[in-house]
Length: 634
View 1 (cartoon, one colour):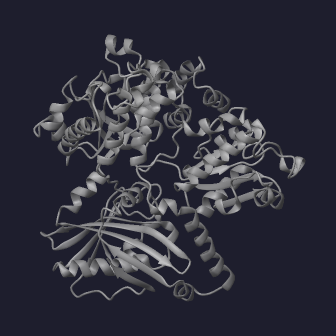
View 2 (cartoon, rainbow, N blue to C red):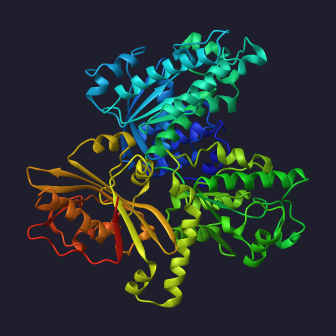
């Protein structure tokens, strides 16, 4: 496969030669290699016809080989002709490594499907239920003379109806994703449409805000109203296509909508990025620091080029504030590069904002691997932003796991180039996200202590003053728990994925035990770092561990020993006689292949795929595992 062709289509997904090239590759090439190339080309910039053709080509590739995709089932409910949306949704999910089986009810029947417990929807549960709405689905519209109280009453009644649909989707519908509402682009009240309570614009804004406020944890509101605003509501809501074909938007908007919806689903599955890696010269600032000097680079106020780079820095800082790590990867002399962050008055980003700073003259592919290792995250968690097309091409070839957006020549377009790809979608933002950079810096301090002192492990652990807080999943920890379940791959014995809806069902079942573990030490708070789900099997008097995962940044600190002691205590309190563990191998979790053996479990079985089961007898009670953590129950 010619890498030059791949680069050409990444740079221009609307290249007229794309489909001919893709069909040839699917016909003649290795299915897995072709799928990997197509995933990198697929973007929201595809035109509608090309996107549909690529969706069909992915089906042909699946027929030829197992692409190693994660499987999911989606129920898609809409009051319009949804087949075009569903086809592109499957394409963009495929680009994220997910194969979706989509259930689509008959046109106009989605409400009946949701409300009827005997419907086909309830007969075969879906991991995700998507409710794609239009303004036509709003049952209660305001009159021009409505005041605040009348508007409140309409919205309260509207939200109550939608809440009924949400509840009807449980427990069979998994996580529910619902669009909010796009106000009609025509405004009979003119400028007052956004001021008067009877205006459609104001009513839509208030209704969307109420949806967000009312949505329980198993409901995600997909902000399609913002998408339409970005593209232009008149372009999006072209009425011809609804009247003629009952399409929800103009055909050229369907790839944009389906891509955003797919990114929302992928984020729920933990397929997202964690780190924005930044080049320096002509990316964070204009000019080359080594040639132009501290006073010669363009960054700050008073110049169009300098202000564009500064705006991009502020965008990066907003990402950092919500939990995305920032890193630097640049070919530069380290001291000269750092001086810009320390001394230039125009810089918004400073050294404390950077979780990992790598500047040298090595190739950037090697340095990206160093960054991933230093931050203890996968290469597929990185988004690398570089103004140089040659460097972007090299990274795509040598480190294809890293996401590399195309940048325009003008720095004023950098923000849009990154933002439209929705790299950093997340189901929620929690306290651990907000503290992530400081947590990484605290971890670096821990490593520095053990490295400089040469202390033995026990001495190092004693010096940390470790305190673990252990307790069941609560409303306060639910979002972080779902996030960890979706993202943890290495220390994860079964890699089962659960949504908020799934966990809420387990919380209400007395046969399930849920645990979260938070860890802090003298350097700071590591946050919620481990999740355990286990269920009671009364027929065998055992507590079966369904899920056990942990953040790799706290490895070798005794957390697993403390967790096992706690599980033994919980099982004995229920009169159970054994703990049972299960290991399901994946490409990434070899780290825990021997976990149960190391904790004293005896192996019971092993199948041809390497899946093993383990048992720890509790009669007589095993000796408590030794660790140096103070355990606090909540």
